Length: 320
Ligand code: MLT
Ligand code: MN
Ligand code: ZN
Image (cartoon, rainbow, N blue to C red; front, side, top):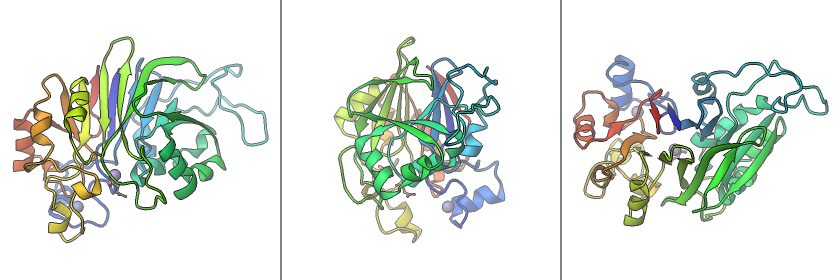
């Protein structure tokens, strides 16, 4: 399985357009001291040609440019997207470099990209029932996208593995299993339903390689740690370094944990338990622009690396 980190920043990206925190200022002064990052998303493929997006960020347009645009298809090929609404015309001029999108939640930084992919005309989406309902009813991103493209939605069930199928409905050998993580639903959600936020365990049936993608997680209990211990690669919530990071800067009233993001440092932080996962490579992603691990030469960065973990960066690739 190929895993490509498309975006490793939290909502707002890095540096954030309106932020004057020390980390954003360092990135503007010297991008070599703190590399810019786009909003959190990954791409996965078993064969290196059929790719799936996990989360569709507002930066999706720039992110998809990292994937090879497929060659034109002959007019008879069933993978050719349908023509504009009300026509039967199919054109080989347009190709989409992804087979579909899998969502971990309906937060804006993970789902606004759906509407931005409306030119695809035909999109496939995998998400839990709670996430689908929030996209239908609350953010209305699904109805808005459907005004431009057909969206084929497949429901993911918590703790149940499902094989991803490509745009022509052929199996891909990649199976995805969502699992519950602690946290609140998006602030615009009108219901708090189980499954509003999940982590994904993705397994390549041919190689047995496993990747856990957990961009938001408010608690690390022994059952979740045991699940992560099974993965070869763990991409984990690195939103904040300290629990009071946003409060200390005067830009938030709630602690990181209260917002569904376990901090990295401190007695209840994720660094210590994740450093005990012996088999897995652990990479922090969904990193908020205030987090000092973004600074190449910070003490926080050194602490992560001393513990044997990696600070994620856009463009990183893994093969499992
Ligand atoms: C989160 O990660 O908690 C959300 O994406 C917050 C936001 O809306 O930016
Ligand atoms: Mn987020
Ligand atoms: Zn900032």
